[in-house]
Length: 411
Ligand code: NIG
Ligand code: FE
Image (cartoon, rainbow, N blue to C red; front, side):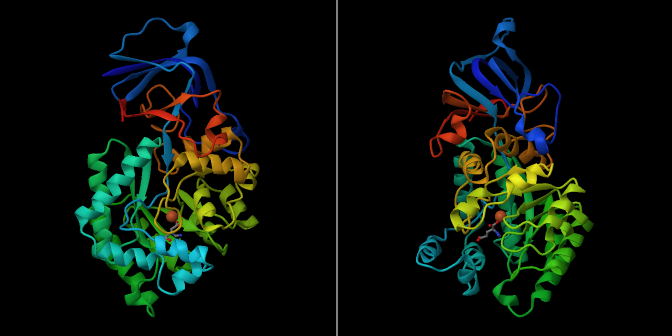
């Protein structure tokens, strides 16, 4: 099967050489070809160029993209889309004055989702997650990371990760599974956090590694959840079992989690709504990707990650949704890109780099995803007719997407 897309008004993120990350000032550059074409064979981008230089190419299907923008599908490197039910009551409670912390302190929040998930069958959980995944693909997501973390028992964490494995098998998009082993202290361990860490280290991580159900190990490193020592123990155990760290850190408090992540060569450190100069310094000495989750800030009314500060310090930045029932019930990367521009003052070019190539880096797949490059996977978004690509972040809330191509096939 081959597809030729012709007359593309603007072809974004087109790279002659295969880059895998964009940092600092370079994030302001988003290479564009105007009046362009792309040729896809099977699941791969094989050629692109300007229509002026176009010599007739054979293809099974030709898509005329006159007036339309084509760009790489979004790479969403941080989600929790496998969950059961919702937390709408907590949403209303927050409107009425309770904070995210208040709700967690009275046994709601993550523990609420864990209880629901433990009482949900694997098939039901799969059906709920599959529906969300279908929706985010239609919104242009072409590669995604999915975390466990609402199980909080060995059995329920395995259930979540088996659902992710089934999604990997059934869906065409690239899926990276993460064991979010220490997400909250379960009720059964309320006064015995160490006992829970022992369970994670001695049973949960080995069981997951044994079934090869995860690539990454994650911890919610935060006051009231897991401190530096806990995080260190869980990450070390994960690494021993071949899992790479990607951590939740600095969502509400900055107390050294970023440096700890860097020390363990974390692939990414995510959230960073609070960020100290020490954190910036640590990141400057690392290969670790900082990841911002602006939809979470929007939904919880907490500060936005200081993306400008991060990029201006010469660092890379990725953007992801954090799709989950408590802090971000939305998997819309278009909204993320728009919000990053509006609230974090990223330029459209920076935001699109952050949501494509750098998102792919934060999943360890930027050699094959996240830019329009010969030999890379044909995961593309074709928009409706638009005046220019600024309209993607500018017309926030609009659905600008007409077609999504995943692995060389229309979704
Ligand atoms: O990334 N902060 C920790 N974990 C999730 C939210 C969990 C929840 O509230 O269900 C997050 O925001
Ligand atoms: Fe998260």
